[in-house]
Amino acid sequence: MFPIVEKTALHETVSRMTVQAPAIARKAKPGQFIILRIDEQGERIPLTIADTDKEAGTVTIIYQKVGATTRRLDTLNAGDALLDFVGPLGKPSDLEHLAGKRVAVIGGGLGLAIAYPQAKALHALGAVVDMIVGFRSTSLFFLVDELAAVCTNLIVMTDDGSNGRKGFTTTALQEQIDSGVKYDEVIAIGPMPMMRAVAELTRPYGIKTIVSMNPIMIDGTGMCGGCRLTVGGETKFACVDGPEFDGHLVDFDEAILRSRAYRAQEQMSMEAHACNLLGGN
Image 1 (cartoon, one colour):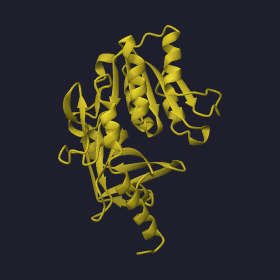
Image 2: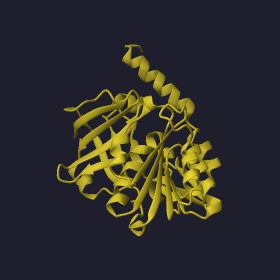
Image 3: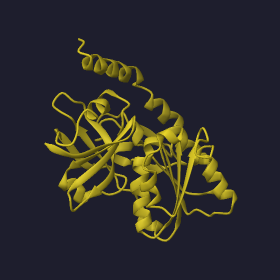
Image 4: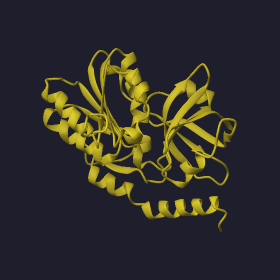
């Protein structure tokens, strides 16, 4: 069993949970993930490692309540425990070559939970980190203070302009490039349409762009094939070959279709979960 040390609601749909897992905390690196299972009846779900504390032996995850399992997970609190918490899995981010370079780390939605450890590691390497993040509205802000502490420049965009910067993350990135900023690399993490848009923006400038394909992971071990995607004309599996890939080589059309393949089943699972909470059959 893996004790839950702390749980905090970041806003109404996103929570942060810290779990006692010393072996994972000692080895985990940015870009890697864990697989958890709440109990014997629970499904296995992959979640990116948002932070670790090696001395305390803890691992922090951030999740959005979008499915039956994450909704069940959110009913747990400090003092409860998870049955399974396995990791670190996936290939670590390749960041060492960016020491002293200028990098744009772009995060949207729950992708901020993954972008945070990337920016933190790059900042520690002495890179100049422009953090560009996007939210639909200021009411959905989370991790903004934490992100500000691990980057050189923080640019926050909102779809509705409620913070005074209306537009998408690509809007801010284009403004930076147009102003003469020269990026050695761009790292984009978030919804697949956003990552695709970033990759298409940087392509004509020849700026290497890395994307995280964890949104399509299911099993996390390469056995189910659910995270299969095409990268540079070759078949890859996000969970074992990634989750990070060259964004200019990813077939996003195929990946987006795959990510939507189980929406009907997900909806049925959520409805069954809601029924159980209400005491139905």
